Every structure is written in C-alpha cells, then in structure tokens.
Image (cartoon, rainbow, N blue to C red; front, side, top):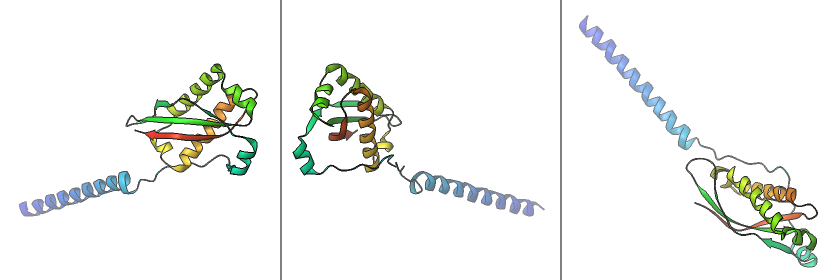
Amino acid sequence: MKQKLQLILNSLLILLNFCGLGTGAYWVYASTLGYESPYIVEETLRQPASLPELVEKGMNVYTMDKFLVNLAGQPQRQILLQVNLDMLNAQSFTEIMDSDKTARARDSIIRLLNDKSYSDLETIQGKLFLKDKIVEEVNKVLRVGLVKDVYFTDFVVR
C-alpha cells in the first residue's frame, strides 16, 4: 500500500514538472521567438518627386532646429531628430519662417513624437508614416502655404 501511494505521488510530481516545463517553454517562445514586429500601413501612397521637377520649380526647404524628445513606452528612449520641410512655393516658405508659425509647428511635431514609441519608429514603414504625419500636422498650422514633403537629416533613437 505504501509503495503504491509512493508511486502515485512520484507520478503526480513528474506530471507537474512536465507541465511547468511546458509552460516555461511557451513563455520563452511567446516572448522571444514568436515576437512579430508591428507593421504600420501607410494611409496614403506617397508620390516621389523627380529631381528635374525640383530643380525646375526651385526647392524651398526650411530647416528646423533639432528636436530632442522623449518617446512613449518602456524602456524610456529619446529621439534626436532634425526635420527639413520642403515647402510648396516661396509664399509657403516665408509663412513658415514666421516665428509664431514655427513655434506652433515645433509644438505639433513634439506632441506627435511624444505619442510614438520605439517600436513605432524602428521600421521604414514607421518612418514614412511619421513623415506623413509631420506633413499633416504642419499643414494644419499653416494658413496659406503647404508642406510637400519632409526630409530627415538626423534621426537617432537612444
């Protein structure tokens, strides 16, 4: 009787051990091997500008001061970013040079960056999505002018 009870107890402990190992193996798989990077779909398709068109029309590129902004999420990360705004025409360029418009545009970009996490910006799709969002936010600030495109000259996440 005692041996039978010992055999049942050993069998239950072995079964419990295998269940624990299976659960641990699943957690490792789910947190490392099974991880899929988020995929961001662009809302609109971007049309690349050709170089002859840019030369013909004359580029009106406004270079903003560098941004150093905290990103959302854990671990805490920062982004160092320099944004160049390709304006539609000379009138747009002079409008963005107004200090009030520049301050509002910077504020919009900072708020946009504060809502992003590292996983949102690590892929090419994330960077393209960010460019489109910056164009939208700055165009909301401007009354007459428009931003055609955004160029990043510095893009460092640390």
